[in-house]
Image (tube, rainbow, N blue to C red; front, side):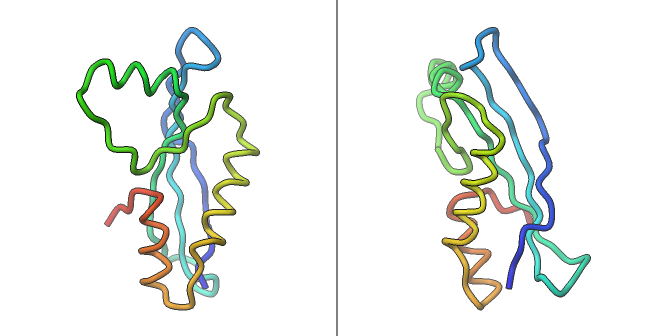
Length: 108
């Protein structure tokens, strides 16, 4: 069974207002009984205000790998991450990883 081995905050970019942010994370997931082997996924927590600024500069932004929040709260991020991981569970490692890749960017 897969488990989250680590969650690392990667890049933080905060605007002048508390509701203007993007915070990127990398997560390592792997088999519970295999300590070193893991696959890396990434996602960004982004505020609607920051997303609006991005959309002012581009015609379209694909939402894959984004979690939207009005107010950044790391406990809510961790809770949502755990819910997604539990929702995606499967006994087959590849299916589990593919399920997670629906929400997060998979780095191979």
